[in-house]
Image (cartoon, rainbow over all chains, first blue to last red):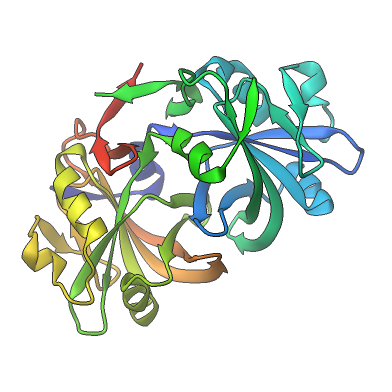
Length: 170
Length: 170
């Protein structure tokens, strides 16, 4: 049976929700990571992915000025870093300096791959769209990378309050 | 360690992936459900969600002509229906007739809520964007509904080949 409910209450039924970390070079020249829960694949051929970034977020400037970014699927070992990158702003923080993690240069874009992630996708900014209080960015994937260890598991938000971890089939 | 890989291989690291069923009234006047793995929230205020629908899919016509749709988060009990709605076409099939499930009228849009879903979100089509081989539709959420049973669990695709089920924290 369905019961009408306020959106803010109803959306708490969405969990577990996948998490990504997007990395883009900002106008100051530093690589800036941001953790995002709103992301999707949008095309098979050519491969594309979208992310939604709040209008007030510093990462918008990095993505729009550089025109390229990496989308990493963090592994479950990266929960603490993901929380840090998602709750601090690169406007007044060098997030990678304050919370360092293993990273390596991307191949086709000027950004970083996260070494311990499950996978990394290098994207060229293809389109953007204002959707309410977030900007939607669509990236065309120009290179893909996977963790050499096939046993690493993707990170999810498990519930409200940024509780994060791996999941498994019930 | 990251290893460069073909996209088609790298993207198999995405699982579990959330699943939604979008329901829209088609030009023939019937309600047509389609199961989609590519979906995201795109705005808090006003609440919005996006879905990506392949250019060749019949659901594009239903969404574009009606201008409204419901996004349901199916529960884990709905795996078989989700598979049916995702692999058949409404062009030559009345999917709800061939695979009936409990449904009830939406309140603010001319569509159906899926009674056994975890939650249902009624959407007015707000924007669309061509992204590669899929059309991205953004809906503004005008009403939200949740299952009266708080224990129902959301459905996920667990791996390639449409294997679906519930997940739980590891």
